[in-house]
Length: 128
Image (cartoon, rainbow, N blue to C red; front, side, top):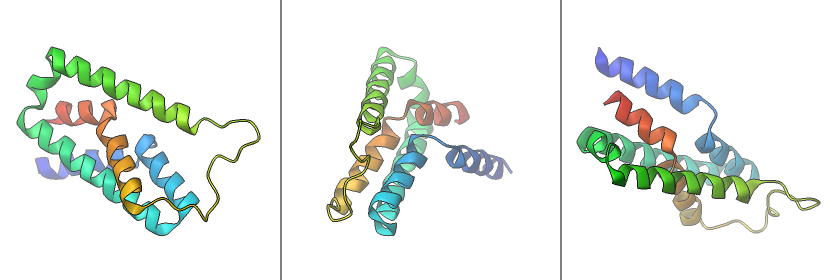
């Protein structure tokens, strides 16, 4: 029964808007279905990493100075992403369709977006 509750909470949290959902939506709209799938796979890999961390050493790491450093690094990453997607005057927010980035690049960026999301990390530590 606890597994079903955990799965339900996880499903609700992943369906709520956030940087992960924004990244998948942007990738899909800008580059097509395949890019959206690669972004979703990168996000999924990050979710697995968060769950593994929370089930092993999560609580002890995040109550240490290393945890504070990771939190600060993750916050800086989120600010960088916000700066990167902030609309600039007169310039389209997404490149033209002919400049499709490699699938590995989309996967890497999605994975980093998820791994550096402090909300996801603390969510999994709180549930463990």
